[in-house]
Image 1 (cartoon, rainbow, N blue to C red):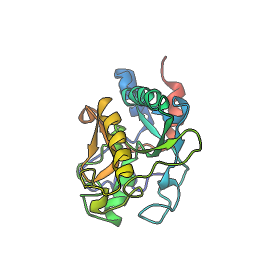
Image 2: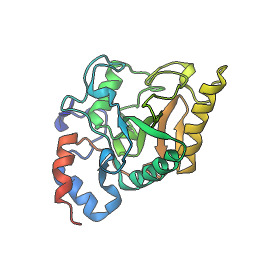
Image 3: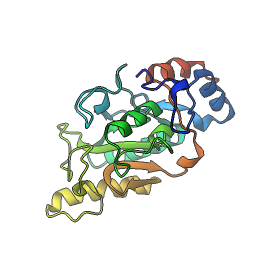
Image 4: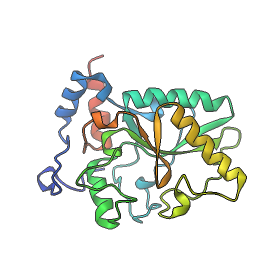
Length: 223
C-alpha cells in the first residue's frame, strides 16, 4: 500500500521507520529485524489478506498495492515450526494479516476509534513492528477453514478467547489454535481469538514501509 499518511503528516507523536534505507540499516545492525514474506518460507500457508480487499470492517481496500504477509525473522522461524507441527495433524495456517504499515493503523483508528479492537496511533500496533499475526486453521485435505467462534475482525465479546462456547467442536478448534501458538512463543490478544503477539515484540521499531518497498529492499540485504 502507499502510505495513508505521508511522513511529514504524522500527527500522533510517532515517527516510524519509513525510509527504505533506514530499514536496510536496521537489518544490517541486527538480522532479526528483517521482514520475511510468509509465502516464501511456509509451504502450506493460505493468505487471506482481508485488508487487500473490501471484505473487512472498513469496507474499503487498505492495502491498495496488493496483499502481503511479512513478519520479523524470529517470528518467521517459529511459524515454520508451527506449520510443521500442524501438518502432522492434517492442518495448515490461514493468515489474515501480519506486518501492517503504521499508516494503516492510523486509518483504522480514524475509522473506528475503539482501542479495545484497533490499536492506538499514539502507541502503534504490534503489527506495525512485524511481531503480530492474525490467523486461523484449515484442513489440508480439502481446504476448509476450521469453524471458529466468529469471523475475522468481529468486534464482539464472542471473539474474546476467554468467552465460554456452547459448541464443543468450535471450542476445541479455538483451544488448539491458542495452545499451539502459545507453545511456540506467542500470546493471544484478549479480545481477538485470531491475533497473536510474539514474545519480545517491544524490541522492534514501528514501521511504515509498503509491501512493494520491502520486496524491493530485501534482495539488497547482505547474506
